Length: 319
Length: 218
Image (tube, rainbow over all chains, first blue to last red):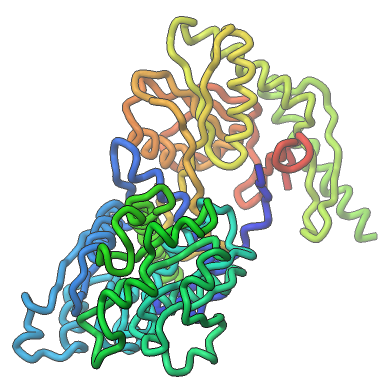
């Protein structure tokens, strides 16, 4: 029982969560510790607690999403906030309204937290500088998807105890992946060794400047890693011909039953979803005993509750 | 000279406290020691030592047992952090007396606080886990905290408990009952009563969390 009276002098002061790159290891750990307290809300008879009572959260999604949008909506409602769902197709954006006008109009209705996903990098930051409400990044371009990064490290920490010293491979379409970037920042800050794995055509141009190792062969790393995170091939973003055929990609970079035989017996298999079954991962692996893909989704809810709670706390302290 | 002034000042308050103790008939022996807490600059006086804390817990256990029929289903739930430790001790005592296992749980009330949206000076409370591994429905819940003061923690704890189920009754047991209620809440089982002035710190230290059992007052 580690109870210390004067140890908890740490104060969370970010009213926006824009990315994990700018957070310290201590701040990331604080979010994870906070999320732990939110887990039980989802398992009890009254699945609601009052800390965001009377607050309004807007889900401002300019890109499609099922998991993240629903997870944020559920997280907000479990904390007793009201939630407004905004999607591009059902809004005045299709009539030509600018992003800032949309946000300011929503703000004029008295909203407190904006959860935004946008195809262009930097939009959450832009928004945070121009409106008073808290801004939570739910994915911007190829930059960051901080809550996914947090739920990934939360899941790993929950099972492995710590990230310190773990070897983690992130495999697939790194260049188009904001998940890979947020994962990289969170995992390396918490002491893990991250390797990006994929064909050279799917590596970011300046990958050498990032705090990761790079490998172009999954077979080289599969035996060494404690955690493997398989990214989705994002066909909607792929330009040109990054790989000759889907079969060839799957042959070299897919997580197959065959490859799993060479992996550590306690390897964690992760995927941010949605899975292209049979492409980056065989179904038997996705549903296998090493897979924590559904735990990731469950943990995502607790992590998002913690994030909404903390940004709102920081805003309250600002008053 | 300065030291002298401090001592005489603390002797004065010491006398005050003793008279309060006598008033409530709760003072076994007039042993009140002075402790200077390093770094804080404040003079802290020990108002309860480990023997007195033990005696209070024994007394609380006796009162709970005499009021609640033995066939009733009792469980003890402590409010983090010091209430958690006291609840464990209380449930141990109750288990021994009743000859059956009295379940014990821990409640984190952070999400139910009424000051979450008001600015605070220093650190914010960390949301911690609630660990109640049993069904609270139809049980008599002995809610345990170290100090009952404004009553706001007790209010938050009751709301948190109701979200977990529907207990048959909730009873409040505290080690220290301090004057200064802001809500219509009273303890069913109170140990030591004090009227420490507003703004003064009343701090409960326990072996499990702080290394030793004592209650100190600024």
